[in-house]
Image (cartoon, rainbow, N blue to C red; front, side, top):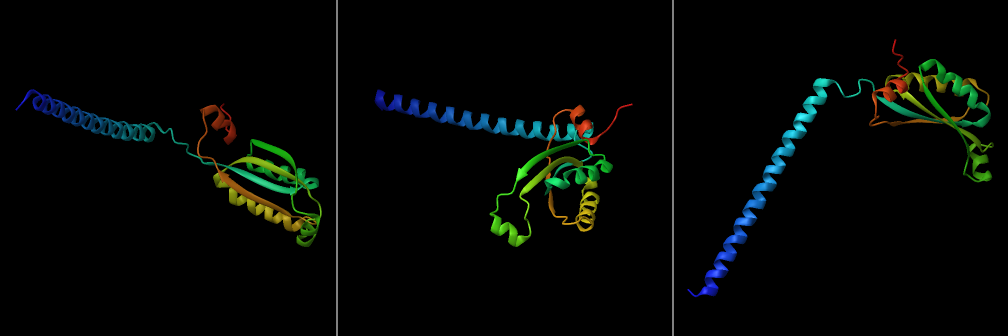
Length: 162
């Protein structure tokens, strides 16, 4: 063997060793990440950091003139945060007239509510829709996946510390 071949073999051998080391390091990193992740989950479960009560955003769209009526209906359900936004329907007058939506001035009520209260609130809404003259509206919920801060969470739940 001449010196070129010896240098090539040493170079190839060095590259193989470095590659094996990198693969080994990546495997160690993955194993460590798995351990940390499982530890984190166990810590969350043991410390109770997961929210005991789920929250949802309740979106209610009604005629603007009836917004106060629906806001007052929500007061009995421990809703601590409500936002009223005036809106305008986007359907053309002809289509809106066919569907029976003559007034395009709407109010959108955004409320943060406890998940356990949703069915009760929607049943109340349905009752109000039928009892109100020309009572029409849309209501739906959006889940909240996380809230940052214990105080914010307690505020949204309407929990008073005493």
